[in-house]
Image: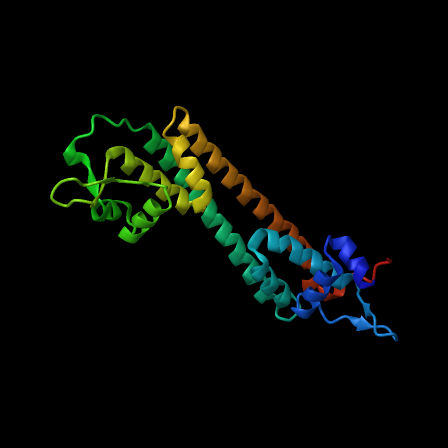
Length: 239
């Protein structure tokens, strides 16, 4: 196959295929008498494996896995693949915990606010198990904006029960992998009627993304089989 043939079959550009060879994701190609690259089915399998693994584990980890598949022992590539699956499994576990926590937190009644109910930055940080700087960052990003003390500690951050609830939800969603920008848009809706449904929808979307990455890893593993079984390596495919 020519470079353009591999590119078309993988959905890459010609330059991307060349870059994959340069990075060791594809084995060095043979050359024609005129100096043109000549690829085989092994190169195609490598590119397809990388494409799927990149969707599941990220480009850097996909390069490591496919490069490892080109050299013995096969256990190295399999160990990297196992680690990628383990990270997704851990992410699923965090999602389950976040879903349970968000459901419980959103259902908690918030009664009349009293002065003694407010928490300082250090108190809330200790309760959540995060650094005080994390809460200050959430404040700066508009995720959880506390009140300011008007008494002796004028200007100090004080978190009302409602703000503590918001901080607990942000903490769970961040632990589940949500980024700052989507949370910045989500949190104002959380305070409106039906806000709990928005949190559930956000967690559902995250779960769908993890499922897609898991499927991509499965597809990548299938493509790796030909690289890990030299005797079964495919013969060159027609253009």
